[in-house]
Image (cartoon, rainbow, N blue to C red; front, top):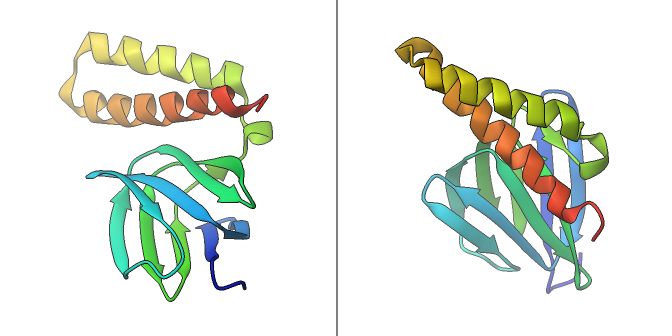
Length: 136
């Protein structure tokens, strides 16, 4: 790996979703957006469902992750998530339907369902955000 690169691994229970050397990796943790470049200090943070942006040789790329954790150590960004999907793997119609169901559940207002509906809404919104990058 070149000195000015940082390695990105995205791992799910299904296996390695992404394995690439990057110039920059940007994630959204529970505390906000975080960016990582070569020689970044060790870091550990919880992630929200989001679009992870990563730059390879000046070109921005994206992958959806369902939340999880990010660890940065020894020029490697490791993301552990239950799910990770590229734009081509996302069914945007299904994500829109999931968002609509979650909004309907939130309007109904039962507390136990509310937590699940909020989580489903966050995942659906993050998947739908990937559509902004589909043609780019």
